[in-house]
Length: 278
Length: 253
Image (tube, rainbow over all chains, first blue to last red; front, top):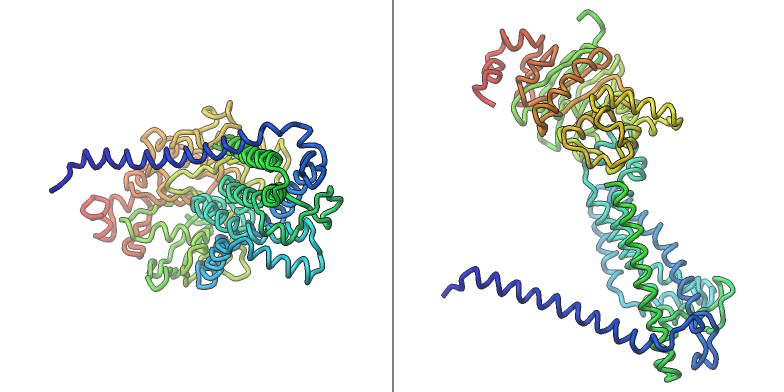
């Protein structure tokens, strides 16, 4: 017996539509839940004062600063390394066994649980390199953690740049590097930024790797060699130790808002860039 | 044609991996005129053209044998810079490829690479090149809007202007009108007949009538070999080789 295509088509649309709806609903529910629980404690004072009594009262300023610094360090290190690797793999090497091994390695690295990175960071940066629990140790660890994502997304973005652009650039007397700089990178930028944003998101949300490497000091960091507590770690400790559920949710709400804000800014900047050229 | 040839090709063979595309082509191309290259698909016309600016260097597995001289210099000599060569030998592709930048930035792409940074000089180059490519009047009021918004025919003329702004010596055209409407095609052809007074132009075309209209000399390629090369008038009226005659009268290809 054969079901008429009209019905299978309708069923397919229905099933996929429901899947989409379900996904969206969960997402919205989580965000609303966190905001509803967290927003009541959020105020400018909460954002800009130091925590007191282990975070039971007071604000979250040092964790906000810690999160921003840690993420900046991670992205500042991972972006040039990752984009550089992606350019090298796509523009300067021909597809070979070695490039496939590097790519496979990057994919494997992307799948390693973050706590393993934390352990590695603790042994290598904190202990062997004697950097101690610090923003630097944490930032470097996070950089290695997000590197594969940045490499792979940048690589896909660069590969998607039409080859005809490269040929035109070469035919106008450009070298390989001039072509990369003036044609390939600007065209691939939206994809590259997406990869970096994914990295930013992962850095901000990371807990396990950060506790091991940046520590959990609640003091305001004075330099990159100081220990710091990120918002995610703060949330974890507040909730885990039962210090203050309200402040935990307040921190979570700020986390969610920060990530939304960063994504929106990045995408609007990128759209403006793309619109200017197309 | 008593003057020295601009380009002289001797026993050029080209290979993609093991496959031989060009079978020992020899040809002399005099300066400041249009050479039309005709032949059926797969006859090696485009490969031949892409040897002249060494664009095929970028294709994995591509190699050549034989010699190509530009003003007497061997362009495949190890000491000869491909990047410098491409500044002297511009190329227009079959499909117009404006870079995702403004009209102005497209035209100054080549000059900027040569280190020209002076705004006035660049402005002059833009105006002169766009005028020579018969597109100035259509775009002069929107030089800073994206080139992608132009129509296909305008884009191809912009690409021509972009080559002229490099002030090359030779212009290679690879079926430049294959995707264009008759009016845009006519404008490109008109531009070429004026430009040949200053440049050596090599026009690969699938349209034999186009070669008959604009080329001073025509060369006929078949299966990677140069079958016949001579003044266009002669080639089209009294071809020496029967295969040339068959092709231009439409009996095959």
